[in-house]
Length: 318
Image 1 (cartoon, rainbow, N blue to C red):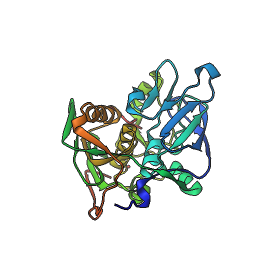
Image 2 (cartoon, rainbow, N blue to C red):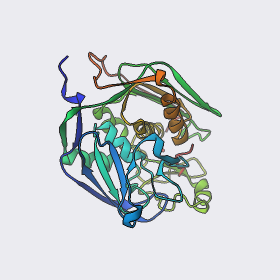
Image 3 (cartoon, one colour):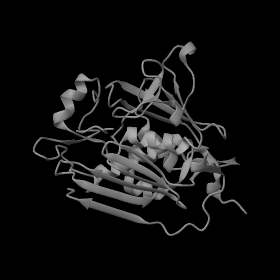
Image 4 (cartoon, rainbow, N blue to C red):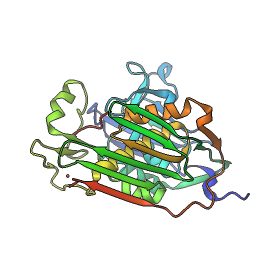
């Protein structure tokens, strides 16, 4: 069978340099996303640390150190990088297989709270196709994981598909669902601009716990006590909340180590549920198979969006 372009690994055609602030640390941070050899994968490096403490942190589920309000890779209290999900979502969605990310602090910059800046930067430098096949993780059977009132399930499917549903007591959010096959174009147009969100009433609690110190109206959708959005510009999508949760899921599932061929369905999920779902999938070799053959003759792309009680700071919980 002749391979098509998407069956080969990609890296960046040049370096990307970005600076911003950590949404939780509140500290300035700069990153450089470098091209990398085939089969490198996505690797983080803390270049601010002494040489003896510098080592590669692979973007894999085995590296996850915490999932409280964001995804942390490495060892909490040791060498780690936090809030990797928005960058990881952009990389996996745009088919960047290999990159080395140098970061001069313990957190990836939040930029505007979405993946938009990362997507624009990747599109600007472009990709280079590498002479090695891409690996895909194909779901072979149903794998379900439940956590309290939340649940997720992986299902066999010919494409990469996400079906994410949220259900908040807050009337301004309510119940929303986003369901779509995931392609670079869908991610760019339908998810990449969706920002993190939170409730004003929770801010002091997060500050006391050392979180959200860099959160602002520049990088978060903030909901006040009277169920109104404080941000002057309002929402970027009517259902921006569930789209951001889907964006997070794309980034969290990227830690499987390859694009997943299957359907990921979740209800009231978050970083912790996403991470534990991937761990459950990988816990039994009968659940999946590795393949370097992209889906052939995939069905027409489907996009379904449902918003119930949807209108415009809660951090990403769970």
